[in-house]
Amino acid sequence: MVERVVVGEPAVVGAVGSGKTDGAAVPLSRPTRHPLVGLGVALASAAAFATSGAFGKSLLIGGWSPGAVVTMRITLAAVVILGPALWSLRGRWAALRRNGWVVVGYGLTGVAGCQLAYFNAVTHLSVGVALLLEYLAPVLIVGWLWLRHRQAPRPLTLAGVALAVAGLLLVLDVVGGGASINVVGVLWGLGAAVCLVLYFLLADHVDDDVPPLALAGGGLVVGAASLGLAGLVGVLDMSRGAARVPLGGVVVDWWVPVLVIAIVAAAFAYVTGIAAVRMLGPKVASFVALTEVLFAVLFAWLVLAELPTPVQLVGGLLIVGGLVAVRADESRGPRLVVDEPVTGPAARP
Image 1 (spheres, rainbow, N blue to C red):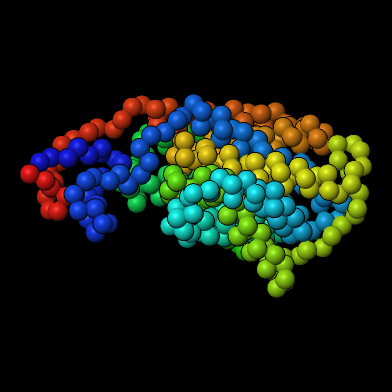
Image 2 (image 1 turned 180 degrees about the vertical axis):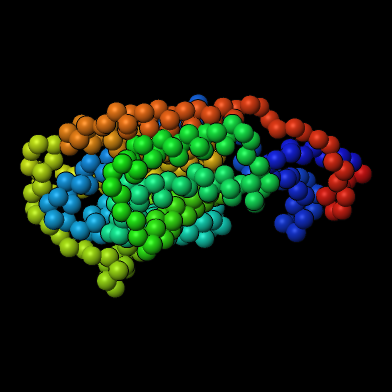
């Protein structure tokens, strides 16, 4: 017999040794995507993540340490989402056990690891350089898909990568903003990028039987426990600041911005982010996530009255152009399908 294989995508193989003895073909990756809905969900996630900058900054201005802010954010988000996550798992506990290592890995890397690496990076680097290093993640994902799955990027994807990186340079004002460079900080920034790559890849790797709520809830619980442990052993500074902090021209209680960054920028953002990865795939979702930088500039304008510069606006257009290029490349239709003979246990007469 012959088996139809999509060139450039993970192969379809027989389930040898899996307990299925009929030789049925089993797809190694999720076969369907929902690009239009996924795009909206991914943009909502990016916008939600972006609120952490403007609202979290009010706490930092009030003397709160970055470690204390991020630990409160992740811990409260875990508490908020734990109930719905458990409810979504009714009857699916076996699926959670099968994917336990993915949930733990997601919490350690995509949640706690990203936070730790980024905040360590900004202690040695300017915020712009640290963000630029972290958002090399989409480029790393394109490279990973090329090396691991032989999905060589086509010219349109490469053009999108170039446009997105150029746009980030302008939006973050790295070139003209007097950015500082430090080797230790660069290593932490690259660590944040690797953790962000794992955030997207692990969210796509988990079985469909595990709801996004369950993966987000489990990851947040693992992340909160890891950050709490880091604070106990002294890796994170957990200093608390003022009880009232400045926010949008007024002074508010400290828990007001904490609620926003926990419920909106963590609980909601992680759930929608996981759902977006499942609908778009890790590559496209990671490029859409670059819009978080644009939303961060917008929220800084609305909440902190920090106006974007003309150069930042041009950078935003370049990022959007990069996203359009990558998305257009993904929507060019299925890759070439060829017939390949199948031999061995998977072949049936």
